[in-house]
Image (cartoon, rainbow, N blue to C red; front, side, top):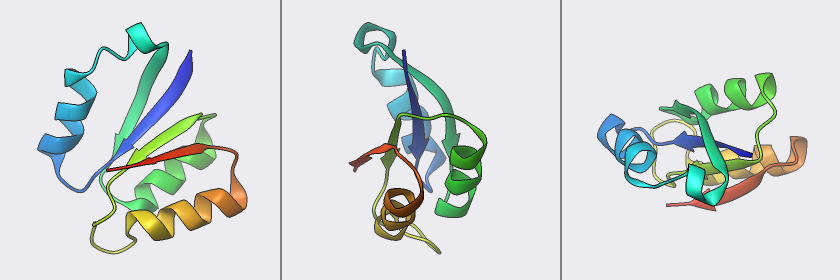
Length: 81
């Protein structure tokens, strides 16, 4: 199974994405959620993720800055919302 991290500053959005899709049907396991880019980087560095689904507009580190850091340091696919 592919491992997915969901990143969004709004909890209702994170939980909605996590619980609305049938991830197992797509061979994807949601291994966690993060409320900001810094938290996401910590989770990414500690686990072997395959996919990060991130919001673009977040306070602090936005999704685009997060994507640049991930691209430079990890082999993870990015999806933006």
